[in-house]
Length: 87
Image (cartoon, rainbow, N blue to C red; front, side):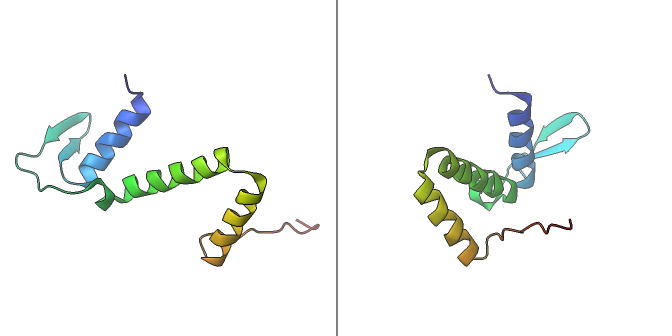
């Protein structure tokens, strides 16, 4: 079965897509929900991106990781902060 964390994530995505309503500890199905792609959910896209980064980190060579980090920096996706000796 699915873990509690996964179930909560799924319900949050479904609520964001207006497929269900969460009221306290109850989940209500929306009677005739509009069909939407999972990719329209911010939560889903964020989790998908996180999974993609994890796959890169787990299965890439050192050289590939360096190239990946450099491309992310060039695209402005993140910056590496250097700690000063005084910090």
